[in-house]
Image (cartoon, rainbow over all chains, first blue to last red; front, side, top):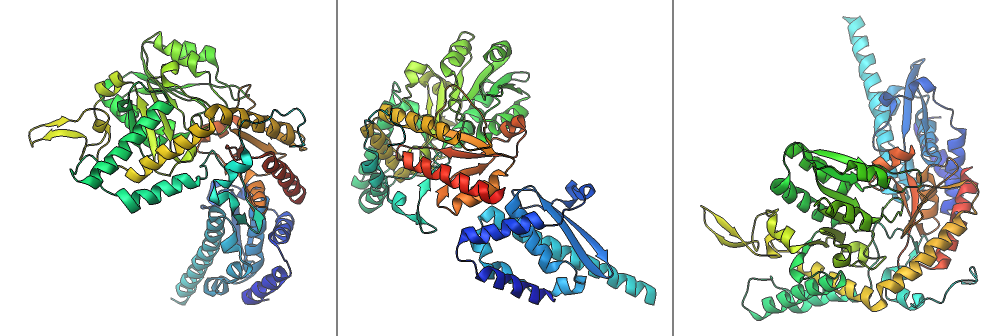
Length: 148
Length: 415
């Protein structure tokens, strides 16, 4: 699935939920199912700033695609991290860097999560994009390097 | 009220009081609001809102300056509010009441002026382990500036100050003690009379942070014999950006001014400025006139209900809340002081306070989660934060029932 298709699927999943408690039930479930980050990556280097609760995000390159693993000490935050991981994990840096992210708004999370929590979500998004751009730049320079 | 059979008949009519607060009639996420974040700020009664509108509609003008009619009216209303507040805390004179922006502003004022006037290198300032950041950081800044040292009165697991350790800390080096009357994060009511008596035996002045006290219990500055006392207007049903610093006249006369500017001067030349008398010496610039006047209205509102009646009502609420919360499986109170006022802090199992807060919010229940601007307190208990429910005169037993039901629902979703 492309990043766009992933987002559309999430939006469709959430559209069946009538109230906030249902949405949260789903987010919490996703949080509980999130594959845990390896403990050795739960270091200050992997902490995402802007979250009131703690979030750790680790990025790895596998066969040209970025794979994200993450964790949080708060379950709801973990659920939100899980949404991000679902959308972005397994795509190339270029795809991630160029993607347009609209599912957060469409699900209503940016409006309805409290401001500090929402900032955390946005910082997470920024961080993922930053990684992608960095990997993309690195691979470009390597390409240029071999051509020389 | 069927929940507690032994409840005493309250001397206040809470249903009638609730009608005075427009915001309490609002719904949140389609549900009637349960507002239990009163330690952060209280809602405002209609009379306070009316005072603000009335001020700008009828008498808006600058104070202490103009000879014209409006300026006289505004000055009278502003100074009358000072008298109301002076009488509320039983100050000897209205001049001992300084209007500030809030508790933080009041503490910064004293830390700065006291530091400049009284603190020498090697001196010691005492604060307690349960202070709000606003009663730590201004003193740290001052101590750094003056080469002095900030020492901390420790507390125990219950969230009570270790008074023996306090006595041991009292040396000739200690120049001022700044402690909270009631802890904002734990609800502990500190033995301030004992602290003041021991301090005065060594001629050490005491500043009380009464931000969580004046709205919950009678506070009489003469009876306490406290040297400085600060509180915020917005936590006692008044507007945000208002506050009060009480200081004994001899102390306020002795300390140098805080900020320079208009109103705090008698004469100004480029060579020298002669400062104004109290209280103007500490009120540089145009104050929050409407706010100060409306704070007077808020205090009168509290006086009409009777602060003793509010105390009696809230004591029942706190007792009921502790009793009901105790029945939630996995609950753990953070701070379990013998003498508690206004707030209950807790955690449930290992659930992150933020998760609980989020799910309570979606059920229309406003509580506070996090470190409550008291990170050293959280460090002491080795926790990231707590969930805190805090009460006001308009809180009902039904509010607490909804809180308990809300927590149970949230816990069932999170575990």
